[in-house]
Image (cartoon, rainbow, N blue to C red; front, side, top):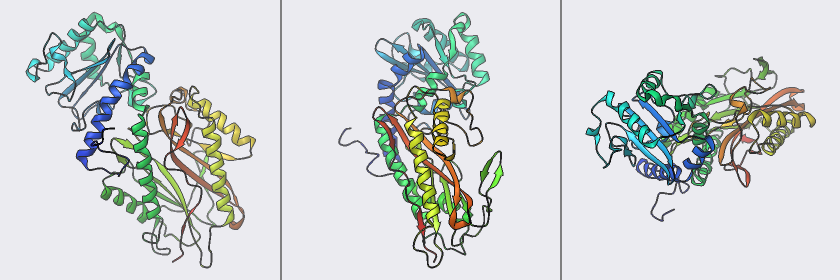
Length: 440
């Protein structure tokens, strides 16, 4: 990394201008270092990513410069695998960052006037195809992954019509789109360490006397505090934060075949409550997804009940069992089945519902269960695990707590992890102790 380049691990969030510099540097590196191998793996010679303003293919935003907050009119990107790597080109009324205008395929850089109008854009695409002569042209259509299914119906119709006899070369770019979205540079993983650290710090602040006043503060108050705090820090949440309570005397309730907390979401927090939050933030075009747990001390208590701390340890053991089976080459469904078998062998009652996280919160890549689908996820669960990918290791364990008269308690955990050649890394570490909130 150049000495004068912004360092996303130094402090987050960076100022917006520095974020743009980082993101554009990453994009260049990804196009040079990652995309050729991903296209070879998918067997695609030309990747066409197209979208219109406010109806963009989700992949399109990950290929545009940081100063492009959306497509301009119609924006078509052409990524051609050649002997020299990947040659990017753009068909657009506006110059697209470092992409070469495809309208100038015949020579010269050209400019926005090279495209005479909307009808001519598709003619440019055809001329590009005729010159490049790709055997397989990937387009973003997919049954299993919404993020890889971004080619709109009208764009598909116009593309097929423009290509004419060359349209029989069109194939689904699902594997390529998923690979592009899920694969992270080492620099991106380093930044995600910092972003997860920020998430952990904000959660610790939320579960502190500065925010939680037992007998007065509601769980909903804390959830809105979390959203406001992330907004004020410039790391917008990508979903509404939630805070759930469990309490002695209020058993779990069955929902869609599983047991979930039954204390109302807007209940006042009381001493003796177990608090659980779910929080996700965004910065640098990346996302986090985190769950952590806290206990509100009763008067006279110095620590959480042993039964709750033991259950958290069981949750950590379940994390170990899952990450040990998160092996590149296995499908998400295979990881799920192996983790659940290992849990059963140890007498652990657990649900596993982990997912990729990165440029999207619920990212493209193998689904490792869902909270209401513990026998596997057809389609998305059949996708294999690859190295240099990031997941939200999300799961829950259940067990009886003696101090709560044997009541069944659910301990939900969610932690960012990276799968690399060196194994699984916890991003900024995982929760191994309950956060303790004083009684007041």
